[in-house]
Length: 160
Image 1: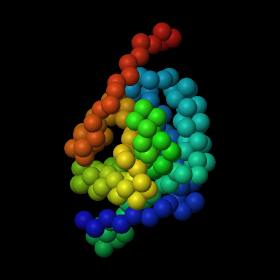
Image 2: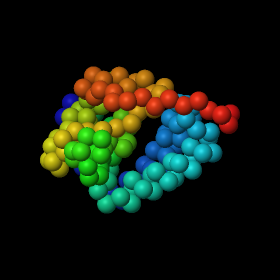
Image 3: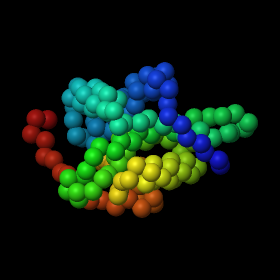
C-alpha cells in the first residue's frame, strides 16, 4: 500500500457531496437522532457550512491497485480555531469515508495518519470528530487509531 493524498478538485467535490449527504442522513436516522426529513435539512445546512467554510479542505486518498490509480477514501478537515472546552487549536475531521471495496484493508488507519500530519502541520494540539451511534465500524477504527471518547450525549425523543 502506497497511499497518496491530494485536495479534491471542484468537480470531484461536486460529484462526491450528494453521496456524502445521503450517508450523513443515513447515519443520523440510523442513530435515531432525527427523522429522515429533519436529517436531510440538517445535512443540507451542515454541508453548506463545511463547504463554504474557508478552512475546510476535502482530500482524496489514492492507491495503485492492479496497476490502476484508485480513489479509496475521501475526508474533510478544518482547523476552526480554538476548541473551547480545552482552549487549544483543534483540527476537526468532518467527513471520512473509506469506500466499500477498500474497507478493512488499512486505508482508514492510513487516512487517520495523514489527518494527524495535517493537524501537526497546522499547529493543532488535537484532532476531534463526531461518530454517530450505530456506526460500529467507524467507532472501532477510531478506537484502534487512538481516539478516546470525551463525552456521551443521550436523548429521549418526545415527538416520535
